[in-house]
Length: 253
Ligand code: SIN
Ligand code: MN
Image (tube, rainbow, N blue to C red; front, side, top):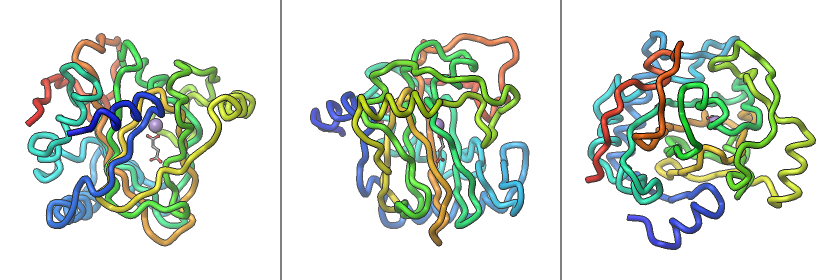
C-alpha cells in the first residue's frame, strides 16, 4: 500500500521511487528468468546494432511465469490502482537493457507523445520500472525532470518518421525546449537505486538516459498500465507484443 504522502509525491513530481520493492528469492527468480529470456529470440527481441546484445525484449511475461506473477500475484496492481484510481490493463511491457560500454542513448521525450499514435486518448497511463540490477550514475540511469509532467505535452519535432523502436527517436525535444523546462522545473535528476527497487512514473514525465559507462549491465523491467477507457482503435496498430490488444482488467490482490 502507498501512503498518502507517497501518492502526493507522485502527483507533484511525476514519479515515485520505492526501495526494496522486491527482495530475496522472488527477486532472484525474476533475475534468473530474465537471464534465460535474454538467450531466446523472436520478433520481440531488439538488439544493439554492433554487439548484437539485447537492448529490448517486449512482452517478457510471455516467456516466464515468474514475470507474469509480478502482474498477477504481487502487490503491483494495488499500488497502480492507488495512483490511477480506476480500472486499468497492461498496455505495454518490456525489458530495457543497457549493456556495459555498448548501449546507446534514449533522447529526451514524453512517452504519451508516442502512445497517442497507438490510440491512447489522454496522458493518464503510468509506467512501473523494476530495477533488476543496481542502477548507478555510471550505468545509464533514467534521467528525469521532476514535475515536468504538469506541463502537459511539450513542444517536439518529427525527427525520424520511420522510428518504431529506434534509438533515433521519432519525436525529439529541442535544446531550447529542454532549457526552458529546466529553468521552470529546476533540475535533471538521475533515478538511481538497487536491484529490486521500483520507480513509477507518469506518461508525460520528461525523461531520457545516456550510455552505460559503468561495468554493470543496467536492466529495467517496465510495465505500462493504462486506464481501461483510455484507448481507441487505430487503423494500423503496432504489433501486439508492442501494444497489447488484450485489455483484461488487472485485479489488485
Ligand atoms: C524509455 O524511455 O522507455 C527507456 C529509457 C531507458 O531504458 O533508459
Ligand atoms: Mn520513455
